[in-house]
Amino acid sequence: MKRNRIFVTRRIPEAGLEMLKEHFEVEVSPLDRDLTRDEILQMTAGAQGMVSMATDSIDKDCLNRLSGIQIIANYAVGFNNIDIDYAREKGIVVTNTPGILTEATADIAMALILCVARRIVEGDRLVRRGDFKGFYPTFFLGVELENKVLGIYGLGRIGKAVARKAVAFGLRILYHDVEPLDRESPDFPADYVSFDELLRKSDFLSIHVPLNDETRHRFTRKEFERMKDTAFLINAARGPIIREEDLVYALENRLIAGAGLDVYEFEPKVHPGLIGLENVVLLPHIGSAASEVRERMSLMVADNIIAFFQGKVPPNRVN
Ligand code: NAP
Image (cartoon, rainbow, N blue to C red; front, side, top):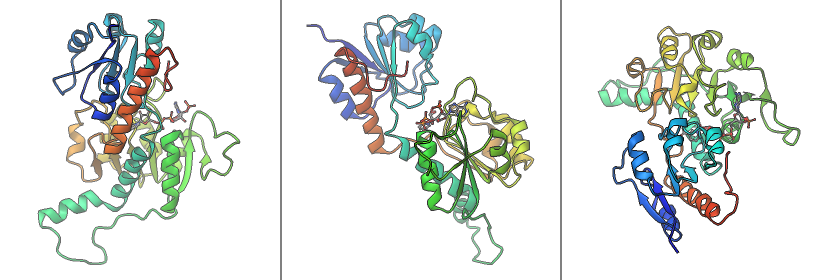
C-alpha cells in the first residue's frame, strides 16, 4: 500500500523523524532555513501531512493553496502562526506540543528575571571590557528578589511553572488571566488581580499569554505609563504582545526600569533601539531550546501525525 507522505519544514531531532519514518515517507526541507510561502507550497505538493515551525506563517491564503494536506503538526505550543479556525473549515487538523516545554520556558523567564534584577549580562560585558576595577560598596547595584511582586500575565502551564519557581526566590505572586484559577487550586501561591492592578503593582511583570487578537499589542506606551518606573518587563511568550517601538520609548524615558526579552515583534529582527540599551537583556528565542525538550517535541509531533493517520483523534489537536 502506498505510504502517506509527510513534509517537515525544518530539521527536527532524529528521534521524531525515525518514528515518522516507520509509518510514512518523510521529507525534510533540504534548505535548513525559514521557507518562503512559495517554497512551502512547492515542497508540500504530494504530501498528506506536514510538520510546521512557529516561524511558518500558515494563513488563509496558504491554507487555500495547500493541496492534499490533512494534518499540520506545529512544532511549538503556540499556534498563532496558523489560522486554526480556517484550517478547521478546510478540514485540516492542527496539533501543537503543550506541556513538555513548560519547565524549560519557565526557566528562561526566571533567568531573565534574575539577569535584569542583578544586571548579570551587563556585568559580564563590563568584566570582558576590562572595566572591573574591584569591589566597593556602591558598585553595580541591582535589586534583590525577596519580597518583590512578580506579576504574571497568563497563569497557564508556563505561568504557573514560573510562579512555583519564583516563590522559591521569595517573590510574591499576583496574576491576571481570563478568569481566576478554579476552586480546585485554592492553595496555589498567587492572587488574582485586574490587568490594571497587575500593571500598577508588579516589580517584575512576566508575560505568558498566547498571542491572539486580544493580546496583540497588549503592552503599549499607555500600559508602560501605568507601570512602576522601577519595574522590569519580561517576555518569553510572543513578541507582538508588546508594541516594540513603545517599549523602546518606555526604556529610553525610564517609564520602566528594564526588560528581559526572548521574543520580538518582527522576529528575527530586533528593534535597533533595544540593541544599545544596557537595561535590557536580549535572548534569541530559546524558551524551549533544551536538547531533551526539543527531542520530546519531535516525538510529540510524530505521535500526533501517527494517531491521525490511524483514524484516532490526535492527542494535541487544537482545532
Ligand atoms: P497555556 O497553558 O494555554 O497558558 C496561557 C494562559 O493565558 C491560559 O491560562 C489562558 O487562559 C491565558 N490567556 C489567554 N488569553 C488571555 C487574555 N487575553 N488575557 C489573559 N489571559 C489570557 O499556554 P502555555 O503552555 O503556558 O504557553 C503560553 C505561551 O508561551 C504560548 O502560547 C507560546 O506563545 C509561548 N511560548 C514561548 C516559548 C519561547 O520559546 N519563548 C516557548 C513555549 C511557549 P485560557 O486557557 O482560559 O485561554
